[in-house]
Every structure is written in structure tokens, then in C-alpha cells.
Amino acid sequence: MSAPFYTFANGDKIPAIAFGAGRIEPKNEYWPHFEAKIKAAIRNGYRHIDTAEIYQTDLEVGNALKAFPEIPRSEFFITSKVSNHGGIKNRDIEGSLKKTLKELGTDYVDLYLIHAPFLDPAGLTLEEAWAELEALKAKGLTRHIGVSNFRPQTIEKILRIAKEKPEVNQIEIHPYNVEQDTIDFDKKHGILTAGYSPLRALGHNTSGTLAPLLESIATKHSVTPAQVLLKWQIQQGFQVVTSSNNEDRQRTQLELGFTLDESDIKAITEEGAKNPIRFFG
Ligand SMILES: NC(=O)c1ccc[n+]([C@@H]2O[C@H](COP(=O)([O-])OP(=O)(O)OC[C@H]3O[C@@H](n4cnc5c(N)ncnc54)[C@H](OP(=O)(O)O)[C@@H]3O)[C@@H](O)[C@H]2O)c1
Image (cartoon, rainbow, N blue to C red; front, side, top):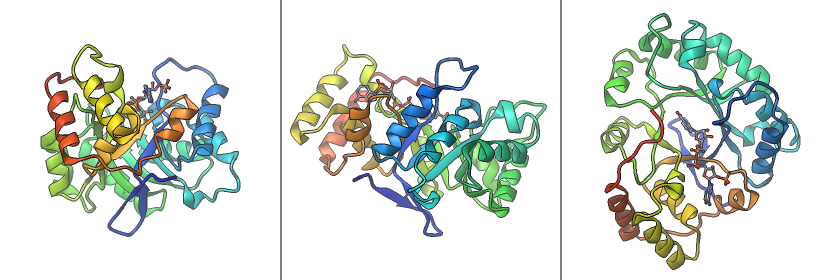
């Protein structure tokens, strides 16, 4: 596996590429095919799994993890997120995290995020939710804490009351959606920006000029357009959250030992900015 990692202030390492356990289809039952997908991702080299209370896939992820008893827990990095509709609304984030841990079959997650700042008025405030995350970290139920889908104004609310500042902000990033103000704010405050949905650009606006540009850059480096998109993020210092059902893609998306030219990165950014679109939120 040639995927790089980032290092937190305490020396812990976070693998730069996470495999997402999110889903789009409705789900009312256990999904054996989803367990198989996570198992394949682990077999193909992923050690960072990105999950969330709202995905309701933790049992499948937990069973996939159990299928690799030879890989110590310390080699996995698990990110999870508390939902606005779950732990935050119910004013019980600890209850949500303990359920997540039980389903995953582990004593701790490596990173726990507030999934989004759009809170239910009946639930915890942002400030209360953050204080809960700090308490869960102090109890050892999570090693690191952070946020997702936050912009500078919402992170500032947390910074005003935080004993510990967020270490990660996971937001939607691809060439069609670069929230530079948030990225700059994260950097200024030492927060690692993570980008989810890095490959959405592949299927979008195929009549536009980004697709041929990605193809030509991919050909120049003898890689695929998907690898170019992942490297476009990593070379800018972002952690990435991707996914694929396809085992060949799972494998190649971890093979990122090439280096994009600065001019490639600039060209992709400029091309994407011509057709801005957000897929989430
Ligand atoms: N924090 C948040 O609010 C939030 C929001 C959204 C997502 N996420 C996280 O991010 C994860 C990934 O999200 P995403 O699925 O939108 O990520 P993505 O990596 O942008 O998209 C994955 C999709 O791209 C396709 N794909 C993968 N490799 C490809 C290739 N080489 N060529 C063409 N298509 C390819 C996959 O199809 P195949 O399966 O056919 O390969 C899959 O449908 C989620 O599972 C979740 O963990 C977080």
C-alpha cells in the first residue's frame, strides 16, 4: 500500500485515504453485500474506514473487521460521526458512540466528528455537543475529535468555547466544489481538511472540459483519472474519503506513488471552477 498518512499533534497517524461506509439506498435490514464490500476494501489495503451513525452500516463494518483477526486494531483507523438526528437530537452522544462501538466490536474510534452543524432545536447546541465530544475523548472512547460540513462561522462558535480545538473538518471537495474560505480557515487553525466525494467529478458534466483534461493528465502520468483526482487532493494536503464496489478500483486508488505537476493541479482547479456544483448539503 503506497497511500500516505498525516500526523496529528500527539504523533498519531491518520491514513490519508479512507474507505467510506456511507450508503445512498434505503436500508432496513442487514446487508451481507456491504459486509463483503468492506472486507474487499480491507483485503485490498484500506486501513482507514469512514463510517457514521446515520449510515447504519456499523454492524456490517464490525463483521468485516472481525474477519481479519491477524490485523491488530492499532493498524486500523476508524472515523465515525454523531448524527444530528441521533445522538445530538436525543441529547445523548455518549449513548450513540457506545452503540457504534458495540456494533463495530471495538473499545474506541480513532476520530469522532459532529456530522453537520445543522442542529435540531430540541437537541444539544453546537457548544454543548462539542463539550460532549471533549468528554468522550477524555474517557478514551475516541482518540481524536473534529467536525464535518462546517464553515468558518460554525467552527468559530466551537473555538470560542473549546478546551480542545477540532483536529479535522471533513467537507465535500472535488474540482467542482472547492470551498477555499473553509480550507484557508482550517489551515490557519491547524485543522486537517478532509475531502469526501472526491470522484463525483468523474460522472458529472461529461460534456464539459474537465473529463478530457483529467484523461490527458492521467495519460501523461500513466495512471487513471480517478488516481489523478485523489492525488489532486492529497498534494493539496487534504485527507480523502472515497469508495468503490469495484475491487480493481479499490486497489488502484491506493496506488498513488506518482506526483502531479503544479501546473496539473492548477489546471484541474481552474477547469472545475467553471462549473461549480455541490452534491451534498
Ligand atoms: N461527511 C459527510 O457529510 C459525507 C457526505 C458524503 C460522503 N461521505 C463519506 O465519503 C464516502 C465516499 O463518498 P462518495 O461515494 O461520494 O465518494 P466518491 O469516491 O466520490 O464516489 C464513489 C463513487 O465513484 C465511483 N467510482 C469509484 N472509482 C471510480 C472510477 N475509477 N471511475 C469511475 N467511477 C468510480 C464508485 O462507483 P463503483 O462502486 O462502481 O466503483 C462510487 O459510486 C462515503 O461513503 C462516506 O463515508 C461523507
